[in-house]
Amino acid sequence: MTEPILISITGLDRPGITAAITQVLAGFDVNVLDIGQSVIHDALSLGMLIEIPSNALDGQTVKNAIQKSIDELGMRVRFLNIPQTEYEAWVLQQGKGRHIVTLLARQITAHQISRLSHIVAQNGLNIDKIVRLSGRISLDSIKTKESQACVEFSLSGPVADLPALRRQFLELANEIDVDIAYQENNVYRRNRRLMVFDMDSTLIQAEVIDELAKHAGVGRQVSEITERAMRGELDFKQSFTERVALLKGLPETILAEVAVTLVLTDGAEKLLSTVKKLGYKTAILSGGFTYFGRMLQKRLGIDYVFANELEIENGLVTGRVSGEIVDGARKASLLASIAQNEGFSLEQTIAVGDGANDLPMLSIAGLGIAFRAKPIVKASAKQSLNTLGLDGILYFMGLSERETK
Image 1 (cartoon, rainbow, N blue to C red):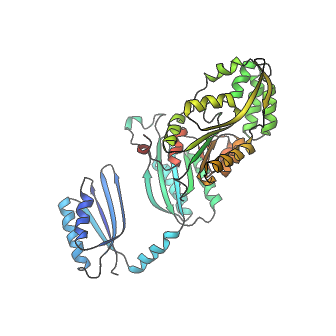
Image 2: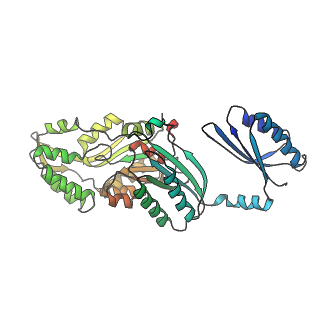
Image 3: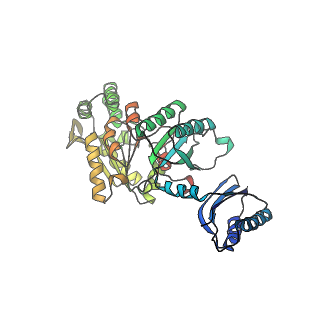
């Protein structure tokens, strides 16, 4: 085997460049060992690692032919001979760890990338590829509240201390007001099949029990208990039972009145419509009430709903629920059960929630995402999303803006 040659070509992108270069190489029976191409604002960067068969002409003849073609195209080329020992060492590295780090914000700055890449380097990881997943944006809309930006980093190398690396990313995300998601780049990442959601303060922008409590005249008492439960300061079942008891005597008609006032979280409809097109199964696993879960099921086309059945007698809320309360442990059990029934592994599931009672299901899902969550949840979950809407999850899944139109 002759020494491989690395060919680096740059210039203005236009149709036919790759065809022209490879046509020249084809004339020498060249083997392509590696190839990569990127285009940033019509500026092309094309790299090829080639091997010239021993029965072909010498390497300089091949280089001269490529140079002639490049000159005709009005581009630039650089050649680098790679010693065979270096090439073989590179081949042996293909089994090393692969990782994905996703940076999400309203706008991406050089400072953010600099800070993130320093952490990557300090942990002995190499950046193999950087890809923008978000769409192109006008300069006029860069700083608007509706803008969103996402860059995905493909990394390689062993991670000596994964918890420490996750902690560094979380601390940086909090410091510079971005979201940073770390994932192992394995076969499951783009092969998820089931997505489950908490409902209150996740799919909708409210805690329904708090809204019902306002109508019952106990809004302050209930909201205080809700807040403490979501922070993990109270046992969920106990706090839920206390809150529901305070609703005793509430007219059943109030449920419909509250239902029409509920607002979907931004990005919810785009996320659900996209994953349904991709063939995902979806579920609501909620510590809230079935009445409102069914309403969302019809609106968003969700497959499963598991929540608490509010007991009604003679048109009035009794202050009790029927059946087993859906708490954190129950959510995790339901996630595992649905996955098993559908024939999916837990690695193929995504769970999204905001409260402490969501942590059990977030911890067993292949991708667990704390969405605009309380600090204890954000610190404990595998991933967190705070800067963008629910559709930001599509970036975690490796989908670009053009793939979700």
